[in-house]
Image 1 (cartoon, helix red, strand yellow):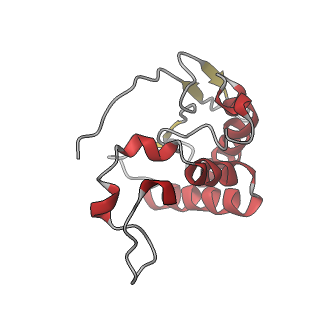
Image 2 (cartoon, helix red, strand yellow; image 1 turned 90 degrees about the horizontal axis):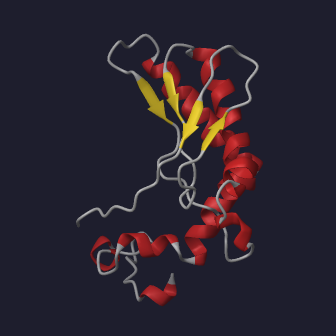
Length: 155
């Protein structure tokens, strides 16, 4: 992230919001730091367990709430560390090898506390118009429907 010339807040050790806004948000995804962070979630069992427990807690909290229709497990997941392996940005590769196993783990944990919510599973960016079926042992099927369209978020 040092290539982005960000001002670091001495109190937190993190870049200031003002300096982050000097760059287009989407460019940060291409940094080795962000790509590595996504890859860590896909490959580190401790992070995966924390992610899974988080969604189980959310599901337990909203169980029985008639105003919650479903939950999106991971908004716009990224390809992972493509700096180390370019195949990670190929359509289907990261979805099959990283996201689907993680989603299956989350799906099983959520279904233990709530089997009525719709679970939305998104494919990684760069995977356009693909559909994957979660391989679960229940009669509740989830589908990953991908229709990625570039879009901007005004600052």
